[in-house]
Image 1 (cartoon, rainbow, N blue to C red):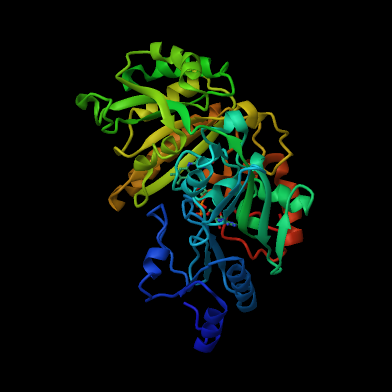
Image 2 (image 1 turned 180 degrees about the vertical axis):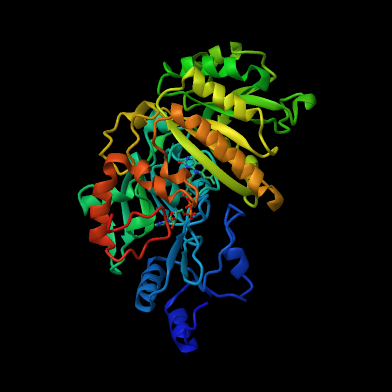
Length: 462
Ligand SMILES: Cc1cc2nc3c(=O)[nH]c(=O)nc-3n(C[C@H](O)[C@H](O)[C@H](O)COP(=O)(O)OP(=O)(O)OC[C@H]3O[C@@H](n4cnc5c(N)ncnc54)[C@H](O)[C@@H]3O)c2cc1C
């Protein structure tokens, strides 16, 4: 713990409008709790910033005193990079304002906003930004890594819709960046994570979506997973951009449209989404009803903001989590066999394997147009090792790693940076592919001393 003099700390506190939390303060433990309960860190200070002025003061303080500096957006990242031990955390959770300019079709969102915050404000105008599938996720971390979800095939990634940002860089300057203002830095933050500074505000292009969209689940028994997944693979190869279907293998949650005897049983669920109206969308997704014996189905017109929250109960904070992820350009029969083999041995009822479908518009962008490079990837596969009892750490982590290794020969050899765990530093270059060297150059220019290093770190020395 820091031995900083109290008058120095008091002076820092007086420069902030938001609170400065320290060990022993009533809000301190809550402020160091992350989505992933595996992460346990004790910062010396947590500056709950109320605006850009507080962020400027906090960056200056960390620099002046040589403190480790971490930045917290939504606190969802599996690796727990939002916290550091013994240093200063810039906590943006009070900076969640979202302003919508419906005429210009621009949304401006604070660096601590969640996906739910953004959807709430934008949907009031029947507008949306393509983001991710779990509404409690931080918009900042998601966007800075790329950001894909239900709308990506239709509207591109979150970064493809980012038109500007306000960022505080390591030299203590506030910069307003965009395609024509410091384009290298703007390029780097569209996939390069929190390596380049603290983004205090994001500016997104908005699109008409909803308020009602078509979405829901079709559920099959796990015993048919192999044949369901093969047909799924064949269908999604020819899907229009306006439809997305993700596959999830897990034990059935107690969903009201599933018979009670199915609850808790292993299943394969296909999650269908389209921004099109029900009458237009349903025929496009209808073939999947004949993939096997449907245990339950619930696809219809739903409010977009509600569908964005549909998976929140399965991904609630507080559980222990260990993930492993591969990108796939295609799903071979052998890859499907491995998925089914390991989905057949899920070590806890909370574990799941999912195949997130990308492609569509997200893949019609050049690989070097943004720092996010994976424009030829069709599926991001994620193993969600998830459990409650620390006694199960070794068995769930072991299962996740074994599956990851078994699937590796069929994967694309790349990975989405936002799905990397803490122990996967060696995969950072893999996550940036051909864009890595340019990211190092931008890092050298804007953060030569690596002040922002509690992230999937792009080191200035390469
Ligand atoms: C349940 C769940 C569902 C998910 N679903 C999706 C999905 O559908 N699509 C998808 O693309 N990803 C998804 N992700 C991954 C998600 O994008 C990452 O975990 C992301 O890092 C979360 O952002 P955050 O702000 O909540 O994270 P944090 O843990 O707060 O931060 C993550 C990293 O970003 C940095 N950072 C955060 N805010 C800022 C800022 N304002 N300025 C600079 N740096 C900052 C942090 O320092 C840290 O290094 C999901 C994650 C979870 C846990």
